[in-house]
Image (tube, rainbow, N blue to C red; front, top):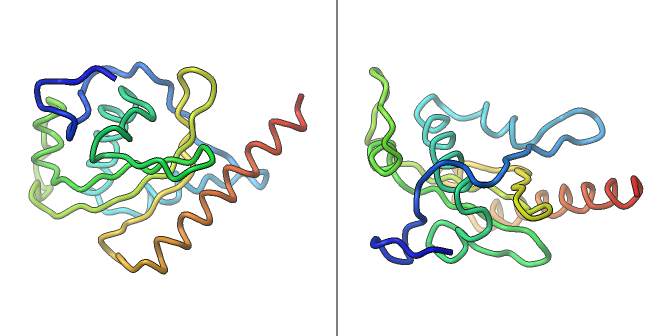
Length: 158
């Protein structure tokens, strides 16, 4: 990972170098999409900007910064804990009228890496709404289940 002048705490924003894909279960449901749709307008905008600007640029290398954490067995966590004002400034994005740019945001996105340059978005949750360790453990367990399902489907397809 290239280190920016901002240091290791910040991934370097920029155009996507990784392809983002959303995991779809056999029943057609997409836990990541359901998570994104459950958020308010400000949270959705922050999620979209952060995922496209930082995660798509760095992939699993965000784990070398405070933005990510490797959870083991190929599962990663992308941590979003900045306001819209901060995220938009770092990404060079405009803030639409009618959205509070200073709303506190605390989101988690679980992902895996496929091949050389694909980020597979599995699921996520609003940690700010429920920061309990029990909830976090439940969300990580779900993400591990989704990753196992994905890998099993890939294995069967070969």
